[in-house]
Length: 178
Image (tube, rainbow, N blue to C red):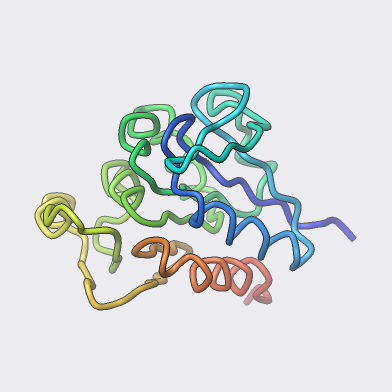
């Protein structure tokens, strides 16, 4: 039996450590292979200065290799991951009906890529801009929900939702096909 493989995408500089570490551990404990991607090779550094090795750079990602693709938040996410390469990965995953998601500020990247249009979603709103961003991309914002799943897309608010986000990833990827 083939093991499920999940891609966690982090900013090379400034990813949120709990939003990465909790899902990674949960997924590994559930028997999934976890691959870490970033915008640069080498070692990614979290906002608390912890590090993680980068297994693959974004430009080398083959969507077909993964059962799910998830963007991790943190202060560096928009500077490092909000660009055409990420949008291409997101849109390919969406078209291939992969489980796709983002947590914290990275939900804005999904919105900008166009996959949240006409979907319900949540995300980090510490700067008070998320409602306007979601309105621009025609996303139904659910600010009172820690985790929102619609279709194959999972969004979550931040570190406090990291375990719920991880658990939902496991449920979605392990669900029986209809």
